[in-house]
Image (cartoon, rainbow, N blue to C red; front, side, top):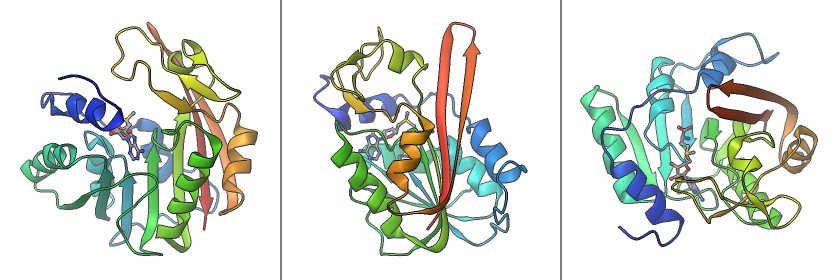
Length: 225
Ligand SMILES: C[S@@+](CC[C@H](N)C(=O)[O-])C[C@H]1O[C@@H](n2cnc3c(N)ncnc32)[C@H](O)[C@@H]1O
């Protein structure tokens, strides 16, 4: 299949049904551990949206918290492939086509929104600001957002061609995102400033791992609406 922009790139990627699937350990620790002061760990029965759920790895984990599961992805195909996987494990989830900028759910619908390596899919700050505003729209007052994004020492960022201060043209050899332009926050301070307009109680973090041949660097943020 020819790559003709973000939707096809990701749909094609997830059509490979035998992709290994696992949740982010950082997300598991953030929601279950004692790393975020004041986090309400009474998850059972509450609504969680996983925006850009991909292969559903994090949905499998969120199901163990006995939450009501919702997800948004770019294409019907991605929703179908992941729905099939979840159903095979007896997990129910309401998966819909949408995007960071257009979440097909009403205002104030979610107790928790998880955005795991998804918020940065846009070329400029205006786009990212619209994503954050849309997250805030669908979270209820007192609800929480948990976000991971690509940090400056990640292979994806380090190998990218810098087009502007934070605009990265992906240039990682063999990667399915080659040539796409993403906006990475660069620092925890700047990430915090972007969410400040819409959220309170903001906390940021960072996780850097050298996993053999790969440098992984994640900027993390959680905040309350
Ligand atoms: C790096 S993957 C992360 C998948 C999943 N969140 C995880 O942590 O395993 C990025 C995901 O974001 C989705 N995506 C790309 N652009 C998006 C956008 N503008 N809005 C919502 N999701 C998007 C892709 O289809 C892909 O599944």
